[in-house]
Length: 340
Ligand SMILES: [Zn+2]
Ligand SMILES: [Zn+2]
Image 1: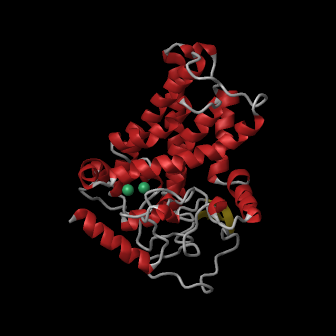
Image 2: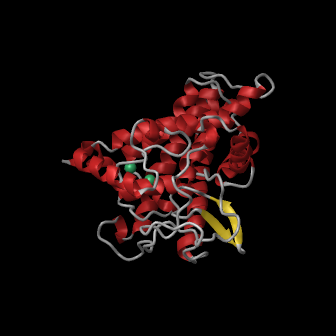
Image 3: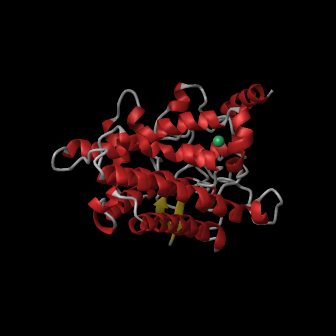
């Protein structure tokens, strides 16, 4: 999930700022939130960030374009979807399985298959876990993650998408049109991302309660050193809880394109945000900003950064890890208290 204010456009100069020893590379610290929340407000910074994240080539803008492609061309919501029939529903499932396979598969292939950029802009100094380990289903981290992601992640998103398509088509929920409400139609995309940030914080905080963690969320956290396939690698209960954010369209007036964007943001965004790299670097330039150090800190230190960098929920509720040693100490104390 793209968030950096000053992404490294040129080959990053690691001599300028010292890199903290536990990381191979990290963005400037403290780790930043989306600049909507800066006070006093900085409209120029917000505008630049908005341009970089929503409109320029980024993971977020790709998911946005994909939502438009599906909603207006590949498979719009049509009257036939007012009935649950195999034909149109099968397309939803096949498309979501394929999308996750392509996005997580391509990112994995680049970073860990052909080792496309070595350790350039990689967060964790340790190599990705490729050797056989009894901790994982089928013996390997990647195959275990592929199994959970496809079996539950992409499947549950498809179930929810079918139900919501049926809701739009049958008139259970109204379809918002651009011509009637152009400002709300546009504003709803960032609103969706903000809503997801709150939903994620609440669900994720619950998942970290020791009793639930042990039986449910531990599946996801076997990924200490994450890769793209780690993102949707979740216990079925977690997968449903995480994806249930999409049900917001039952109460918030929207168009199917908003529902699809949120679905891709949830599913495909999890793949990009767990890549373990700041950006894709090809032909000596930054090809695609991924920027997910905020969540990488969560996978390293656990009891911090339950939300994401879109909204400062962690900062407001005292669980923020900004990348500093102080924050690591605080997080370790908190972890000790929670699990004692
Ligand atoms: Zn994660
Ligand atoms: Zn967690």
